[in-house]
Amino acid sequence: MKNNRIGLILVVSSLAVIALVVALLLQRQQTGHAEQVRVQGLGMVRSLAALPLSVLVPAKGAPGVLDSILAYRDNPDFAYAAVSADNGRNLAEVASAGALVPPPAPLALTGFAERALPAGQNGRAIREFHGPLASADEKMQVRIGYFEPRTPFAIKDLPFYALIALAMFLLVPLIYLVIKREMAPLAALGEQLRTVAASQAGAGQALTLAPAAEADADVRGLARKLNRYLDQASARIRELEQESVASMASGRLLEYGSNKMQAVLQCLPDGLLVLDPAGEVTFATGKIEPLLGVSVAEVLSQPVEAWCRDPELRAMLARFRSAGLDTRSQMTIEFNPAGVPDKRLWATAQALLGHAMAYGTLVVLRDATREHLARQAGNDFVAHVAHELKSPLNAIGMYGEMLADAGVDDPAVRVEAINVIQDEVERMNSLVNNLLNVSKLEMGSMRPERHRVKLDDLLRDAWQQARGRAEAKGIRLELQVARELAAVSVDKDLFRIAVNNLLNNAIKYNQSGGTVVLAADESDADVVIAVRDSGIGMTPEDRERVTEKFFRVRETGTEQRGGHGLGLYLTNQIVELHHGRLTIDSELGHGSVFSIHLKKMPALVEGGQVL
Image (cartoon, rainbow, N blue to C red; front, side):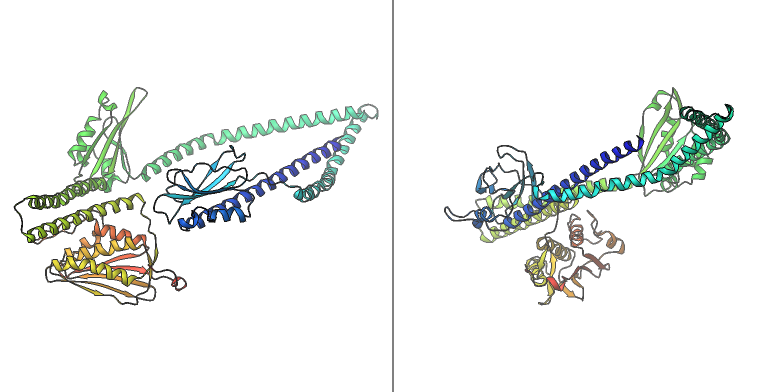
């Protein structure tokens, strides 16, 4: 009976495994089919989006690309294809029999995307792939829909699944024989136990063999007694072991918990102080020393009045010495520590209360120097930008009033007024563009669209644009760029901004009669663009920080040049976006050299399109 039950269990288990394997194969086949549809849909949308609008939407009566797709498609799951305008109107569409073209979805920010449409009038769920039309002047999109794949089971696959089921089912007799062979020693042991029980029973009853049932009952009783004894012995042994190590374990656990908590507190970036109700420090982390300029040993061994040299911090700690009602509120102060005057700290004190009693005070010291400097830089930047905008606005307003004056008939005056207004508008436009580009950089929305660019043409164009500004200031602008420079892969518009910022900076911080040189050279792997000037130069300290946002070089002369501290920051960020590097070589009073290092394009892609 037991062998029959084992055989039945093996048969049922094998059938369950066969069903599971077949289901997994069907699921894998359906997943592969869906992925194939997705790859084909995205590839078709990308290909169609690159075609001109006139090819996708032909004149009335003329055949289009979408009709060709419907006529020669090789995918039975194809549902429809359409070219849709931003207002939801379909300019061209084709659909399979029984399929309706749904309304378009808004264009995604990332360009090409997909969406799932539930089963409706079409009778089947649809997976739509869409993307923007590159050649259209207005927002248009190409859409292709495919029916969601059904369960791909077919009659032709039946022999394959039957072969798998047969192979797995034939394993059942083999497993059954193995189990039976492995259980043979256990059966022999049972027979020996029954023989021993029978011999013991026969010895007590004048050598009369006891019935098999009684022998089994004796064996089971012996086994139960033996198991009970073993369980009691094991429980006693465990109890003795637990009692022997209880005190050691509890002590080590407390020590581990204390060490763990102290290690966690020591790893915190902020400094921590724990004071008892009397106001004496009972715990301090190592971050206290670099923040306050006082060693941990002094803090733990001396009273607060002895080691604390900051009156703001002493006053706050004195308030939390008692257990009054005011200690239930949190208090935060900001101060410059006397031991480290170049830092700005935030100190937050909170009473440790629980079960209607006070355990002391927790003080958290945080380094707020960066936030403080950022606030100051932001305030200075706002004030400076306001000044930079106010000056051109005043000039525009003054010359606007001059132009509006009916008595001004001198053409030279009018030309001067118009030129000044254009210059000031260009100045404000440059400031606003820099602010917008910095905002895009910090939000991560500025992504360069890199193409193969002829560097000599780009540099010559930037040189031509900067000549007028240089000549107006009496500065000679030279160009030292060879015609056969290697091409580079850059975003042409962004890189033009970087070069223009370097040229404008070199002209601004130069003297009348000075020289600015735009040069380019190449090595085996790199192309180096250099802007050299004979201007005021920089100190080593300013050279280290000149690419920081809002930073402006300190000027000691009588002439104070305007600026908002964003040009070199933006240039450095644009160069890093192109996986290049910006190097600066400058000496105070002897000019500066700003060099952009870019990797040359590999030889395999040099035959590509050049912008």
